Length: 173
Image 1 (cartoon, rainbow, N blue to C red):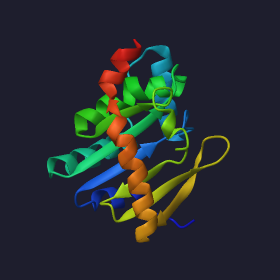
Image 2: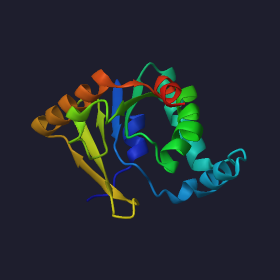
Image 3: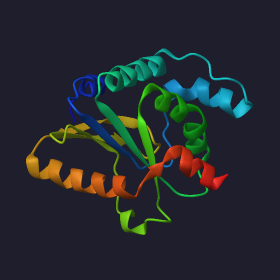
């Protein structure tokens, strides 16, 4: 796996970045303080990495380009998923990211979807790779048309049945 500047790929998107997230947990060290604060019921402390990500989302959205996330879940949500829905997604959504949810129990036809990836302008795909402890280990890039086509078909299938995250969250409360 090569070193990939994922934020540069997002910033360079011409029309749409479409991300599928499939894992029930992510072990992200730079979120530790925010997660701990959420567990205590405290406001999340400032985080320069999250602030930079939100700024990138805002910049892309304000220029008319789109960032779309399709989040796969199972109910009940894991602790990490609850944290994402309550802390991360409201900020991302406010910055301009479109977040949608696929409940695996409602859509078993998508059970085979198990890898996180992002499609950039339907021209390239980047897979996020994780170890058994849910730590990001790197990225894998491909721009071969047949590979991109297969990923796009899968992403569009998921997007077609996904619901807005706020609607999903309201449905499970």
